[in-house]
Structure formats: C-alpha cells, structure tokens
Length: 380
Image 1: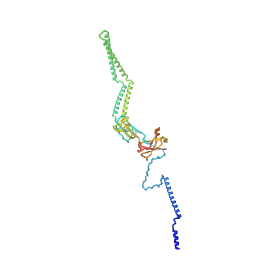
Image 2: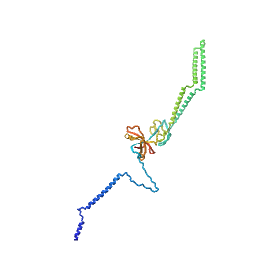
Image 3: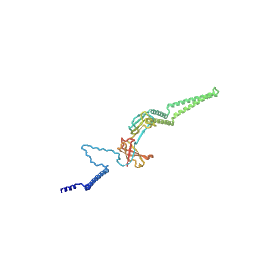
Image 4: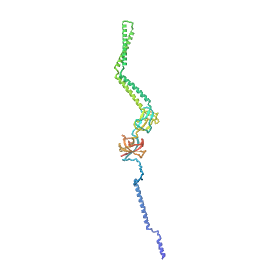
C-alpha cells in the first residue's frame, strides 16, 4: 500500500514534455508588452528632441555670492537690427572724394614732407620743387613792369621845361642858318646877272644849301609844336596796354613760382606717395621708380566712406535713394555698420546688365579701409 502511494507521488512529479504549460504563453505576452512600452517611450523622446532642438530650457537666474560681481559676454552678430533684408550685394569700400595731385610746372623734387598714411590738413605743404629758374623769370618780369610804368608816366607828364627850351633853341638855330643860305643864294644870283665872276655851279650849290636849311627849319618847327601840344592820347593808351601786358607776364611768373609748392587741397589721409627727392616731374607723364605717371601723390577723407555695388537690373526695383542698409566687411564678419544709399547711377551698364549704387557708411571707424571687400544688406 505504501509502495503504491509512493509511485503515484512520483508520477505527479514527472514533467510531461509533450504537453505545453498554459503559463508559458502568458509569460511571452508579458515580455512583448514590456518591449512595446519601452519602444514607445523612446520614440516619443526622439520626436520631442527633434521638434524642440532650437528651444533653450529655462534656467533659474544664478544668485551671486555677497560681494561678487557678474559679467555677461555678448557676441556681435552681423544681423540687421531693424527691418528685413530685401537684397544683398557685394562690392568694395571707396572714399567719396579721392584727390590725385600732379605738378603744374616742370621741376626737380627738392623736398617731400609726407609719408603714406599721414594725416594732412587743408593748405599744408606736401612737396617742394626747385624754383631758381622761376624766381629769375619773375624778377625779369618785374623789371619789364617797371619800364612800362615809367613810359606811361613820361607820356602823361609831357615834355619837361628843359626839353621845350632845347626845342626852341634848335628852331632859332635852324632859322638863322636858313636866312644865311637864303642871302648867299640871292647874292650869287645878282652877281651872275651883272656878269660877275660867278659860275652856274656856285649858284646851284647855294640853292641846295638853302633847301637843306629850310627842311631842317621845318623839322624843328614840328618838334616844338609836338612838345608844346603834349602827348597824343593814343600814345598814352598804347603805353598803358604795354604796361598791362608786362603785368600779365609777371603774374604768370609769380604763379609758376607758387606752383613749385604743392599743398593739400583738403583734409585727408595720404593713400599713395609716388615721388622721391631728386626726381624730375612735369605735368605730362614722367618716368621714375614706379613707371610713367603724372600724379605725385593721392589723398582721401577716410571719414566719408562708401561701398560701391552693382545691382542686377532684375533687382533694381528693390532699390531707392536714401534706403537704409547695413554693411559687413569680409575682414570683420562680426561687425555691422549702419548705412544708406547716397547715389544711384543715372544709367545702367549694358554689358553687365547692372546699375551701380553707392552706399554711404554712416559710422565708419579705423577698421574700414578703402578697397576692402564688403557685403551690403538693403533693408525694407
């Protein structure tokens, strides 16, 4: 009996491999459920990250310790502060007014008082040329003026009393000479008529001498008449005209002397210096260490700068005079300069199908230099 009970218990403990336990299916279901939940949570997290990647989490303000100081680092961005960008163009920085100075006279460079990059003021002496030849010509012209002035005074004042007395004396002398030759001629004629010893040749000689004396007498009379009548107005006017011509020649000589000194026409900065002491320069092309040229130097006002850009004809409708803009230099992409359109070309470039626009930089600083590349954002 005991043996039978024991066998039944052993049979109950035996595992039947052919029969599936119902608990096994329930366990697999639980596993699949857990995996599904995990995958769902992960997908939700990924989607939230993609949709909100530009959003910054709010953080509580940090509380500084007593006595400590706080600082905030900011980075300047090349973004328009107001308005929206309607057009972007690229160009180059140029000064509004650039002046190239060339000599007006031929001469050798005697002195140079500037270097590239120097600041100069209006009227400042920049270059001097040798002026000895021009000084001599001015002195000669001044002498000619003095001679012409003296001639005008002489004609205006008329003859001096001494000149009048001399003319009267000469007239009396020629009158006496004429009378003597007249009497001599009459005596010889009378002797010939009375049959005296007088030849025809003697009579002819006396007659010729009387005619010469008569001509001299008439000339003396005319000279005295001119002196007593004074100088004709036409002569005075001619002398005055000669005086004005002499003064004009002096003015030219004076200008040539002044032109040997080259001065700054305005305030500005020296951009180019193309000459050295000892070089021969002229208003026409002259040679030198930098090749044929006419200019000695160039300067510009760096406080008045602009960017020249070419706008396509298709975008020209987005441009207007005085339109606000912002300039960003390629050399400093994090710096922004306020600007506005100051000039629009009155004609287009047929070959490039563009219109040139000049944009004034309102707040240039030492970082903005001519010929720098720049981007211009035109604002709405």
